Amino acid sequence: MTREEILALLDERQAAYERRDPQGLARLHAENGVVESLMAGTVRGRAAIGEVYKAWLAAFPDLAVTRDELVIDGEQVVEVVTHAGTDRGGFMGMPPTGKPFRLPIVHVYRMQDGRIAHERRIYDFTGLLVQIGVLKARPA
Image (cartoon, rainbow, N blue to C red; front, side, top):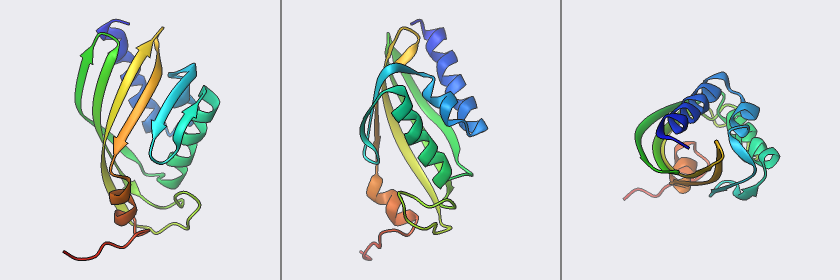
């Protein structure tokens, strides 16, 4: 993929987030794509990846995604984004807390044939749970 093609794919990803479109997000992945994340573990296949997006968007229906940094080296891409929203839909089977969060996430992508072949998501999962009130942090 060219740099321009990768930028167009990531712009479509942003648009799909803004539309709250889990299937649109999943279509950006290869049919046999892989996503690795702390929340979902290792997920294989476009349908399963779509379910991860669906759960995330259902938990945080006001989700806003902002791109902070982007590095493209051939078909290897690192994108730093910030997700912000409110736990209004319940997260991972827990009742909604109504609490907001702000979460920096690093996405490491390997692109292939116009799609995301592999994505690794790196973020502070414990910090997210503390922000939305699922875990309690002890004062320092």
